[in-house]
Length: 124
Image (cartoon, rainbow, N blue to C red; front, side, top):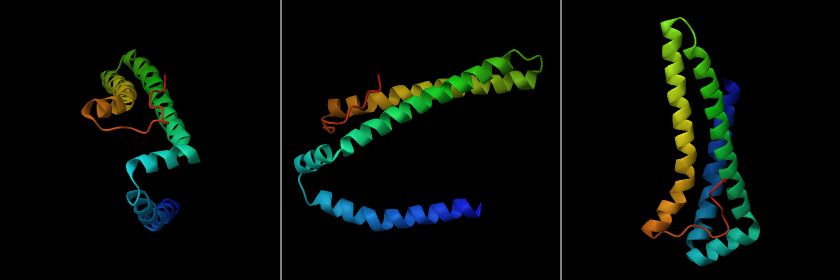
């Protein structure tokens, strides 16, 4: 428990000290310059890997929940069957999260907000 509290404290300290410098630097530039800098420094590739990893993680969680839920649905006990139903719902939510993750940038572009050109949001 103390380790978690220490990690939260260090994370909040880093966020408080780093974010004003980054926000100030980016807000002082135009959006085109900020996008160019992000693409040149490789931050766009890091964001792409982050989104891909998150989508794969959600798919993995969905598979685990689906397998466990189907296993519990086969049980004779009614409480285990209810747990299986909840896990199957959780698997559906995880798969829905993958679709939401990939659809979000497309929705932003349809609304008129441009996303970063060097970031590929779709994991497939």
